[in-house]
Image (cartoon, rainbow, N blue to C red; front, top):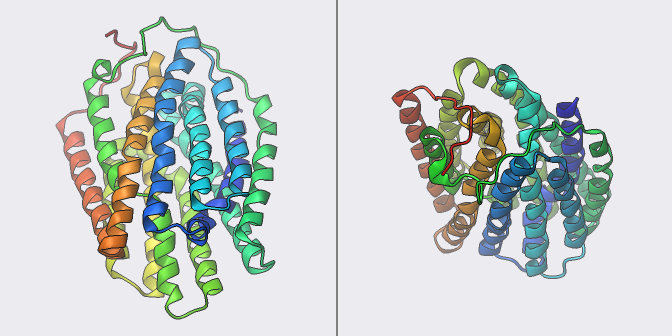
Length: 395
């Protein structure tokens, strides 16, 4: 029941968020932002949230309660979306978007730990896949709703964002029926387990995931690329509308493939699935750099959705597999933190390359790091089988 209820909360939250996300890059540029501003906005929020991700994961392990962190994370995100709707300059949007990401950082590791605690190891990949599928189903509805409001009703960006904020507050209602999976509070280990004290295989995996994340810059550049391509031969409204629809296509593929990808990771191993996902991302970025036809963009957005279906749930499930049972929250928080810490440089590098060299350079950069991460994961999987420990190591 917890997995379903958390999935429902995530579905409604992503319905809200995905009304905002496909129009956010255009909203930033309409407020005067450049490609650098887009990269800064996309990266800063995740980096600001990174400290909260590991702290909230540790605290949820330390005190044996995860629900308060998850609730306030969702609530803060809803309030930040409300603020975003009233932005008048891109810097205001930057602050609001960062606050929304802080809410995500506060809730994400404890939420994933609740899922891990509620599912046995044999179905954990499937549980994360089910949750991710519900989450992304909301995303499909949100992006399609954003398209309808923009295309059919001619609503301004800020009005669409305001409607999304209202839905974000509604998403809090099912949360109150979630049952806390009670655990004994863990002994105080200072700031939990240091990175060095975590199992060696978990540390290596987190570093490989961070290499991938350094190349996995914000989705906003993919949307802007689609807008630029279609803007050459169509009206501005048509270019924006098509870009939103392609983003919705990405979400459809993400949702449809999440559960099969989770089941696949249970059967053949997380590492093999992650290797495939990382390599696909590299090839997708290279395609965005050089292919400009409508058919090519459709295929590339399909591949982009497949990458996220393969990677997101498998990364979290793999971290749980490699983590001691009593500090999964800390392990997930550490994973999210390393990914968040490289999000800012990833966005800034991508934005600077876009502005000073060209959009193709941004995607070549992402492609190179995606392929590198894929090779590293392949070597990691070939080196040894993951070992699962039962208790958090002491420093």
